Length: 266
Image (tube, rainbow, N blue to C red):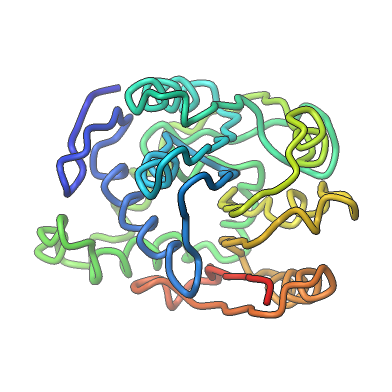
């Protein structure tokens, strides 16, 4: 863990500096298509990783309260450091994952690329070249503060991808439902629910009870579109009263099955 600066000079603790800057780039993509954070908002960040989204959310307005969920212990420790760095008790760290039931599960942790850590590593086995394509797309369309990546020939994307997933570890982590958390915290509203949990988004949504859905004002979800999952999530959100839905691929990830889904009520 080391302290770095993001593109605007904001200091954060990171496990991997390039990855932290890449995560910051993803944050920009989440806060589009009508997704906003205002003074006093309550934000839930499922799949918080080291907390870059939480840090940026806390900067968006006065008295913004962010609850960050991260099950991998090593990543959660860095998240806690960033919560302390922000101060003012704006970020609350919850060291467990979100699913459709309270349980314990085995996660795959990738030390060389912590953001890839997942409960569902099999998603990359469905298409063995999917991660390589994601790396190649990022090399072709890097964030503004990482333009040097364009100088690396994309022919090396396969080698880079293999290095990033090298040394994977199995880690047992706790899981809870969102509704059990909402009940525990006595939350009467959630202005933004952000979900980026590497293939476990459907299970996370299934852990929201019918009585809690009306409390959620807006969502942004990274959806891994395998077996028609994107359409299933759209149908679920429509059923729960979200009328403004928009899905898009991030620049550089058009050749993957990953989409950002934005949902708002009228």
